[in-house]
Image 1 (cartoon, one colour):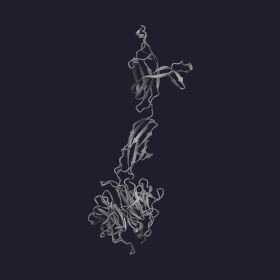
Image 2 (cartoon, rainbow, N blue to C red; image 1 turned 30 degrees about the vertical axis):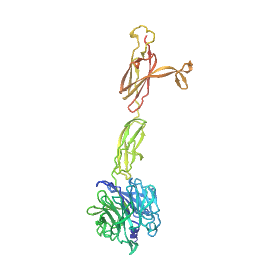
Image 3 (cartoon, helix red, strand yellow; image 1 turned 180 degrees about the vertical axis):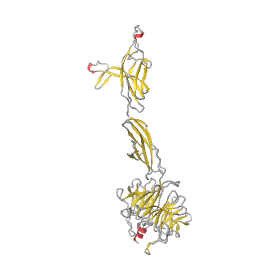
Image 4 (cartoon, rainbow, N blue to C red; image 1 turned 90 degrees about the vertical axis):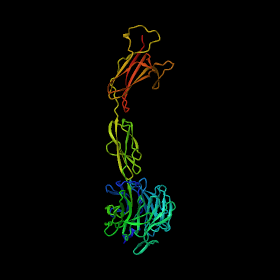
Length: 569
């Protein structure tokens, strides 16, 4: 009898809110989150949120009191926000004769199970259910209420501010709440609660009912009552508007009842007789394949689990049961298709020490949820870095060829991986022997009349530079003229008009022209006509300096040779 009292007083589900998209395909993967009274067959005093994967069948703990928080006292219901976060309605220290407002709304991060408080106290005495509106507001069903006035409370999901939507009226012993497709609310009212032939909660209607609440005005109307509705706790609403109700009461012969939202007509979806799987069905959720998922407080092993119900024939099969279950309560079903991952590396070939930008911003989630990014930047298969931003930069010091990866994951841990090849070239090109076919070339004629002489004795009018190169690259040969200068500290500047002392004399270089060539690996030549803008060079001393740059920007050590430009005589 004491176990029965726990069921009726505290360990019941609240409403189910699902973030499954309206056009979910029947074969879409999904997850089931469950509020469980305790774990490991009574070895823990604290409740726990469980996570079940419909694809693999695996079930695991998501959140419990301890390092993840200490906010759970008596969790009753689960709902899911648009960003994937879980919302838990917690009754606090539940007692039938205690009206202390110690209820709370708790947010749980589905990635790591961390708990955070949304709202506590105020109008929250024993919150029994929660649903998330399309605008993100939380609608909480208060089963006791301040002064014994039951109602629906709107809670701001950011500030936690509470506002009454509707109070009293047809609400006597409410436990379940859900949104209709049009935006109004439906509340499942248990009706009169009797224990040991003694009424604990007395209602005008002995049996249960469904109450429609207009969200804008708070106006209440009875949608259906009596008949098959015996102690209804949980409900879910199909996209077409049909209402599905789970009956907890032992006198109910229908575990799941379907209610027409227009006529209120009731029909049996799944029975609860001696030969059925159900014992104490609590709350109900909708799987994308059309099956119903119903938490049962006990089942045959007395520790409960989740029952699957066929949408057409009402066939019952046990979905999850076993070691982690000990009287499951709230339930939320989440369609969770894997995200799509993309990755680009820019540039795909880079010089050593230069940053590479990795961009995964093209990654998307089918449900529109935010993504987290784990990075394998050295291509060893281990994801060593995690960010919330979809892009980052990273330099590489050594030459290597690798395939970088990014693993994107949504809040419910569905993942996808993308890769991008990268080549790091940290080896600079090398110039081979650098020389010229003529180191003395003919420059401009002097203003006086040149002397006659042998043409064969004259310097050449052009020269050809020759050099070797270790890899293809762009080669620049800078021609500088050597000029006298004056040393000022550590620089060589133009001497000015004053006489320069010997100790301060220096040679400065003035750039005349830069010759450029796209060179191949191996031997290369570059002809220089010794003209700048059509005119020959001024006689004097010059220096030619060669430098190579490969395709990624690595620069070679420079090599220089001296040239002499003479006037025609």
